[in-house]
Length: 535
Image 1 (cartoon, rainbow, N blue to C red):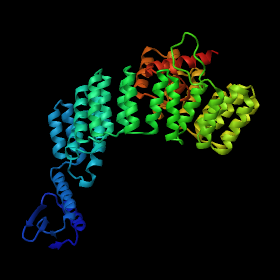
Image 2 (cartoon, rainbow, N blue to C red; image 1 turned 90 degrees about the vertical axis):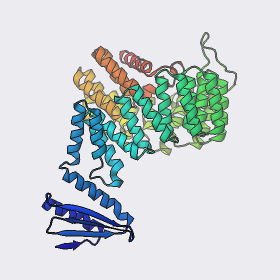
Image 3 (cartoon, rainbow, N blue to C red; image 1 turned 30 degrees about the horizontal axis):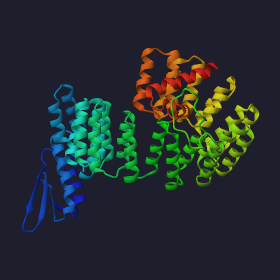
């Protein structure tokens, strides 16, 4: 019985139904008539004849996918079975066989428009099963068909960084930047890997090639300046940042230039750069904050490192106050500016003026937990326990899901009330790393070390960029762990390179620790935690 399909979708569905009825007897043929420009397809089991004729290019993808599906079905293997065979070859130490299986079967049953997404998912699944060679073969095939897709190169480089050798990673990155020369992140990865391997000249050479491909890239300019900065070539870094301000000007470039001068202890140049930056970017709040902090910075003690400090505004509270006020007029929603202005007034006049600034800040920025936390701590510092408790209650009413407020409430609550506070906090924000760290501290106090370690691990998994969580975990291991657990936390922290956290930033952004590596910063933070607990 002959049947003619009216469209490609109907033909595909009927062919699959026919195959499912009797796979052994089904045959499938195609014939292209060049003169007419038509393609005719027939499928039969000797009882039913299915026919479809088309001259539409748009039908080709569906028909190609059907042919791949039939090939896979007739071979007696589905995608999962073929993947298992490839992984079995890998386990048998036959990587070439594994790659060949992947190369010849990876496209079976996959729609052309779904190939990239499906293959990336396949690679992730292989890695989850520790089938590194199979995942590598999947990436190799995907890159052969999609050589200009940055996301695939990034995933392939991540695989080589974690499971491959330095040579494999370097080779993959070299191919990546060759095919995606405008992908700045790939150039930066290539330069960083050479730098970490101790090849500073190689990193410079890579960045020079990156400049040629991306002459106006802010990221490349900053990476080149950082390379020289970290290798104590500060004059080179200064020249590069000056060129960057001309070729790729941005607020971030100006900020890095000012930070370089601060680290070089040329405070005059720092303030001068900030003055120019504020003219170009008057709405960038960090410039006002940095200028205010520069003016607040006390005069260096005799015998300290030499510095350039002739600008009369340096060390002048009135000049700092002016920068904060200008910043608040331009950026009234910036909590750090309000907190900095309040801290300045607290040091100058005590709690009264600071309290009024923070009240005004909360009126203009309702629902900001950082401002509430600053007000609570202000009252606590000045012995107003009852007022700080009232503020904490109001803060949690206005910001019921703010993890930093709950973490502070747990830490400051009387010992018998901490468990209840922690339960309430976990109901509100059980996936906030700050709350998890605060709960971990309770387990430490109760000497439930296994639970504490488990909860610290959970916090680090939730927010690996939170330096305070790493510091708390490391401080715990120093007291209650062993060399193995201490080294494990230290190494994972170095790999994570955290940048956030109240305690962490107070150390990382200080002048004396500006050049410290991640491991050193972690140890300093842990020491500060110990000193605070012993006080």
